[in-house]
Image 1 (spheres, rainbow, N blue to C red):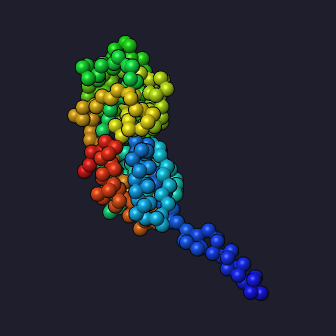
Image 2: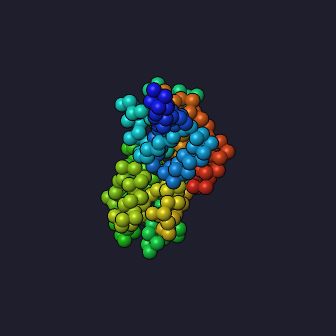
Image 3: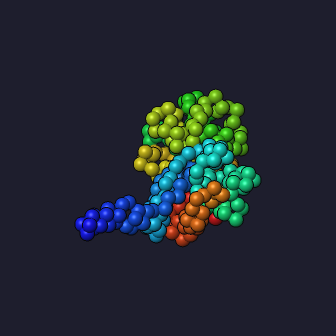
Length: 255
């Protein structure tokens, strides 16, 4: 009897989550431009909150909004703009008090190291050169950086000239793939993505900020969150001192 009781106690203590306590998961739907920064944010937050396991999912903000409307089980939505979180609030899928602008995005044109395209000298008008065959950008229908690119082309007066050259990515991540695989001569991307090793060594042209509306990136805790207190803690960390330092490291402007 005593041996049986001892074995039972040993099994109980060895059971996952019983001896030390199971980690509480929060799922973050993050805009693709955040990939490098979000991985570091996850590690830093988990260091401060060892009881939490942050699961990151990356994609286009518009795609995430559609998934949230259909009941996707996310706790936090980090959008690449402020429009989609506003739609979340309008649909009563999140509260205005749980929404925060965490960063300002910057739009750049990325070119392979050997590219002869000189946007520093010609500006966006250089995209009209016959030698530029394919221009990659994120789909404006779902990606805020795609809308910013579209606005920049229009402001530069080249929208009609370049439209036949455009290759649309489903997100900025796919747009970056078009550039690195040679499927495009130039790609319009968030500056933050260029810190990844895949884009290291490429040439970067900062699109003048006067050519596109300011990209306010906003996050919101979702009403369906199963761990709302932890979700709010994550968003507070993102906009706090340590989170802001990480965002600055990856090229974001701060509110």
